[in-house]
Length: 259
Length: 251
Image (cartoon, rainbow over all chains, first blue to last red; front, side, top):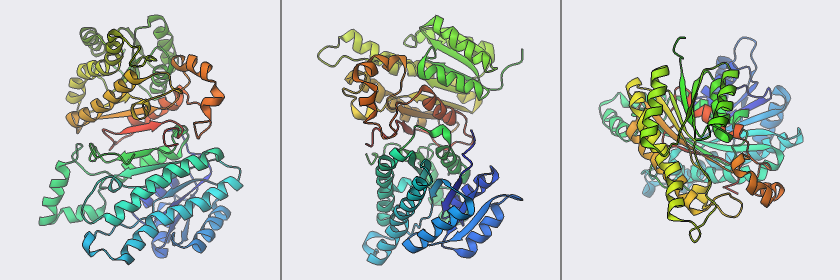
């Protein structure tokens, strides 16, 4: 895999999970990386942890649902790290609530973080990329939940399906400015929390039932999602835009695509 | 000569996307077996692979022949004793629609794409399964989704063949899991020998208007995605269909 451009990459939701693993990979390659999360202490700790000695990683606390936070975030990122060449919209929440119990407040919160957030951040970053001369790559971290009907994810699934379409439309609108936009759809990622749950009695049964439905017979490593995002950020993906990259070990084979 | 560490087979390697893919894989450290009916042009690709510092095996042959493919695969294994990557890229355009196409032309279209991919999967899958490792990348087309049209070289028979490749990809992803991954790429409008006539006829400027990234794709654009799918380790993508079209389809 070739090198990313030397321009900075902004990663939202970078205090933990895929966002943090991605920030570590970028910092390790020498790419200036701006970590953003609404968890101020968490994102500070993550930036310290991922930056190699003398490396370039900045932590910025911001809530992606607040336009004033985002305006401040993008200006600070630009000032600290230089022109932005990449944005990865990784911030997301994924509560599981049966549809009949779902409140309007929870619905609004999920849609605000998972869909309104990427809209606002993408718009602010794209405007800044264009002001800086154009060109860039944006990756939205969606989910196979955007295509798979599972109980309890009406709000989450709808937010991620919306994110897929936001990806497609922004790909078309930002292409004249040399900005590519793609989405990655991970299946279940084997985070520490998932592994801990699978170690309990009831959790193990559920876990094994899940694995039986995945052709590759295991969960995704965070690194396997990160490698696809790095590819999409880089020059090898020069002709990819508006595309959805499912990274699920074959789990959603046979589920009708959203388009 | 010691056996190469990594071996790739690329069909339709004499020109266009196949040639670019073979060269990109060679640059990535793969000894490369090249399959095509065009023997002379195939030798040129082999020379490019060797220039990249890797061994090349030019195998002139028709992917539609089951027996011929078995024979060529045996030659690859005799030379290198392994196959890590198979790229099913061999294809033909088919500009005739339903009312013009003959039965023979239909059969040839389906056979080159679908049976050709089947023949090579059948020939190398046992080796990949025995290795407990392998990557298969099948070349489909956005035409499989869109039904092609005036701004495309081909019509319904080609669309059916390319859609057949998607079904094969998904089925094999399940059959060959978990150690062998099978994915497909759907290129958009790529500037190659195959599309040159149509591009000249329709006008590149007109065609480019339908592509958000405002340019035709290059064989290298596709080759880079093939190399990613063939080499990213570990890989959690299988049965996946990837559009590489400059945003044309969603537009």
